[in-house]
Image 1 (cartoon, rainbow, N blue to C red):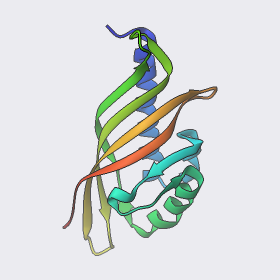
Image 2 (cartoon, rainbow, N blue to C red):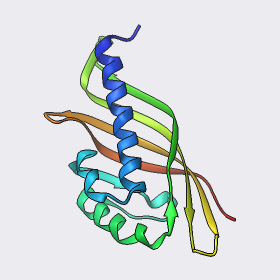
Image 3 (cartoon, one colour):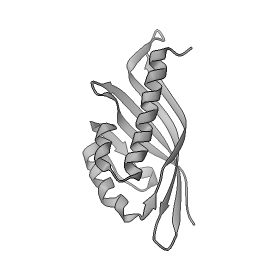
Image 4 (tube, rainbow, N blue to C red):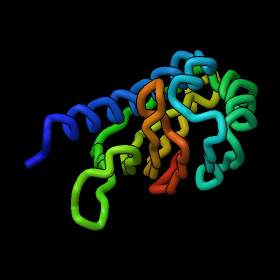
Length: 146
């Protein structure tokens, strides 16, 4: 049975994942500062992006994503695990997750859309300001232009 603390941790991490999607979809890239640690590693290469540390990738996102007239993230299949120590007790300061993302991206005003399906494999750390993501790696499921 999950403890109330672990339930709370999982819900906070799930909200952080939603906050990421909202920041990207609303083009409020500075809101990502409340999602990632300053030294986070991000790898978007599986879907044609870059990898690097958070400040570098944030800058890249703010330059590249405005080229798309519209896009959105639909996330689900939340698999969040707060890490446990060798005795099986909740260690409480780190967590991992894997979520599925469906990300349609309008390529032009003429209506062509790129449908992207991917997994986000993430790692989190508890900070003085709450949970923050310190690693994000994409794994490609599919993409198709229609």
